[in-house]
Amino acid sequence: MNIINQYLNKHIFYEIAPIVIFFVASKVWGITPAIYAIIVSTVLFSAFEFYKHRKIPVLPFITLILVASLGGATIAFENEVFIKIKTSIGFGVFGLILFISQRFGKSVLKRALEGQIYLSEEGWSLLTNNWSGLSLLFAIMNECVWRTQSTELWVTFTTFLSFFSIFGFMYFTKSIASKYWLEPKQTP
Image 1 (cartoon, rainbow, N blue to C red):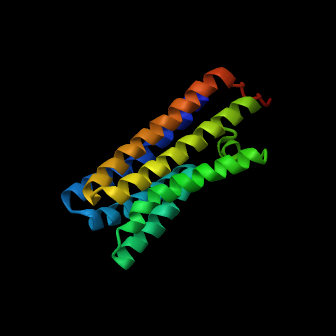
Image 2: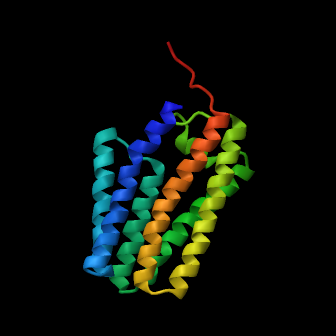
């Protein structure tokens, strides 16, 4: 199970750093500079990930697309709604894709993490269902908060939601892997 720890631990920094930069920039300079900061930092961390590993993992790549497109729309149209719905769209679409792919027996999560995490079919099914449910819950929570609270409170909420989501996904992954882990097949 060391492989799972290595995978999760090496990618956490790349996912957390832009969130921290966004939070700090929003508190110091406001939301618009924070949007520029998260776009630039996400692009830079993705470029570094590509340079280091010659690929960008699927989930950070999707985050990059969402941050760049919805952050860019926020700036272009001078409307904060775009950046606020990024979290809802990201989690909502991710959760639905996981849910639908699982129902058709073609787990997208298994394909995305295959070769890095080794689980039995039952383990993949449980992990996919847990990640899907958690993602949909986070999308609903974000919708409730951005629609009812100030931008400043939403920034704090979405920052902590991002941290919580990372550790929530890690928790489910580690707990399910501890019961359903399969050792990778060794090739000579």
